[in-house]
Image (cartoon, rainbow over all chains, first blue to last red; front, side):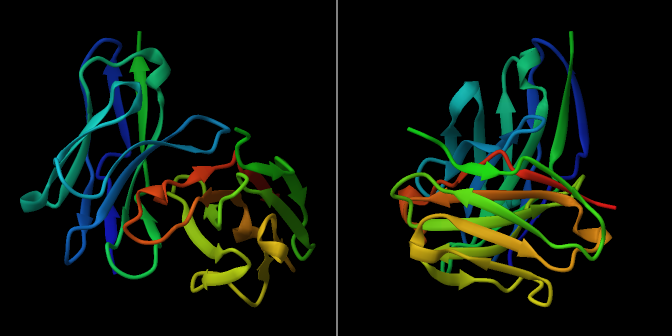
Length: 114
Length: 118
């Protein structure tokens, strides 16, 4: 079965600084990968997804993520963080074969200092 | 386009009571998911429906949890009787098809129901 690790529980950055949130997965083949954002009291919103093709994926709100097969990683990046980016970020993996059952990481809480 | 609707938004009950949550997915979405999100954790899938059939319910505690999706549209999730450890946010999501490999696999989430069991 697939699994997801988000090693950082909290990340603190200053507004305007760059951001990288880490995500590592465990799966025997190339999975489908997702990043979601969750603001307080809200449901999850999809930022971006990787199914195949170009390993650098562009998403909404200026986010991007790079799939690195050799490192089993799918890290999320943003060049300049805004205060409104403060939220919980979840990485998720879906096995590329069989039923569509997503597995989520535990999440990384992003804190943005002015 | 209207999003996924859930009600109630908040519910407080005592242990051993029963509770039900309702979800109305985006119109036309065939697949519906119920997740449990315990504080400090990522969402855990409880059950997945494709139209009105169950695709996966392997992580649903069937001794106390039940879910149905009559007519393949809206869905209810019930807990009877509730335990303290059921305190969580219950998220509903829907997707157009849910078939593996389809670019329509994007899940759209509702705002969730926050359940507190005392």
